[in-house]
Length: 184
Image 1: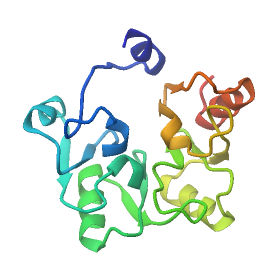
Image 2: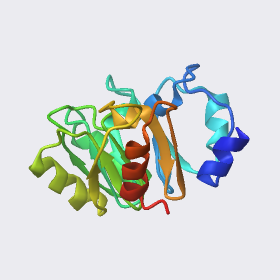
Image 3: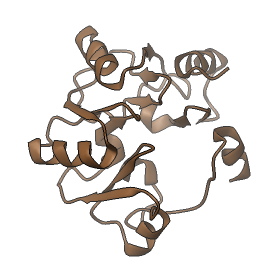
Image 4: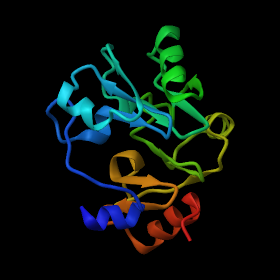
């Protein structure tokens, strides 16, 4: 945990969401708030007590897989209706739009966003890339991670100060990750 805290320059701790240790798939957050699966327990919510939290009652409950966000905007799974778009916008205090990445609806699995940049699936379409840049208000860089894996969001954790990647991530991928997220 200390290495993670050092890499991201933030506090790291063990937790779960809904009893699952796959926290990144079930949680999406920025500096303003967090969207979590409705299966979150009261004890797990206690960890997030200092920020605005919304436990979303929706069949698309893997929030980290379905929401790509930073402090400026969010791209969300097209299956969320207007009511949930408004709730997500209110909790995260950002503009929210529906969209896809490479035609895939689980946008959080296929990209990573910080306040400095977005790393995205290599097959993102031009119009999708433009939409991401417009809503998140940062540049998009195409890359893979963990030795060619296109599911960038499933391969790493990042913030504006650092990133944690899989051990199979190549030096070329690390260079693109550092460039794309402005980590110098």
